[in-house]
Length: 399
Image (cartoon, rainbow, N blue to C red; front, side, top):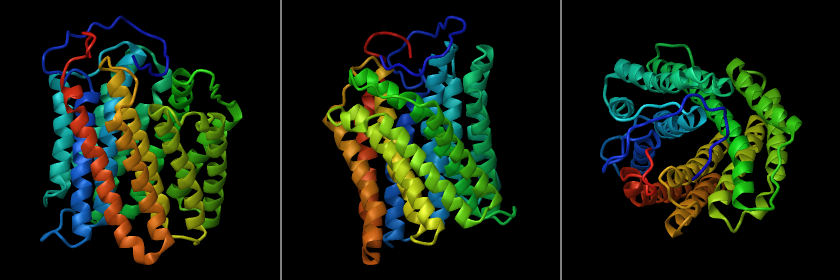
């Protein structure tokens, strides 16, 4: 079974036994399925809108596309992961059954309401979702005194505040650039990925490829995470672009060193591991491109999509396959479906970031092709994992 980062257990967990239909047994099941389906369809519809193929707009503009991929797709995957991981970390129950259905319904309502004129209701519902997940994981963390992971509760509440700010800014009810709100939320997600990547990638590497000796260096860890926090502060306070560039480039260096210590070149024969390393490499690329964009050397959208398509896309699909396999009693081995999904996401990121960078004439085509590759990757995941996520564990255990 896939092991999540070790923490001190609290009281013994005694969840109900699995039933024939297992979608509501544990958090990863509905949220991974919803996220993959939504991601595939939303990106296809956005690409069709961008290309002028839709008679009426699916979303009102690029900011809403960013909103849906960040506060819709990404937040759903984070919710599914944390609702599952916290149960393993604390040995305490997290929502299942009707409470889990309610969380999923809240997320679905948020996706529907952004398409309607009910902007205030959409703002409240979308802000409520990460806060509700924070409460759902906060209670078992508090009961087990799992202090190490309290910060996830704060980050989810912060995401709720940011999504509310973006909604109000889009409706000119709050003095904030909507793009700045999205950038701050991306910084939060970057920090979450950096923390979890540092915990699980070297562990999964050493477990999956004996003799690799992926290591963590205390100073590098502090500088890598510290520079991401500093970048959030720089964005929040709107520091001088040269200062922001220096922070981003320094952070790229620290994360590059961090990745080197994990020895990614030794993972190429193990797809479940190399996809995590490849995704983390996109974090390094994002920070480097962010620094160059702050210096005015290239457009900021390239840096943004290195993070969203390359890092978020790669890390989420890698963790969605690995944790779904581990928590359903399946072997931790990628099959052809999963390998194809991984490659599609990586090529989508390469096309989206470097296609338009190579030639302005290729920019529209790079968006269209990248969207098709992304949708294919997550559509394939949804098809492949529908029976996995809706059926009980193979080993008969609950969850």
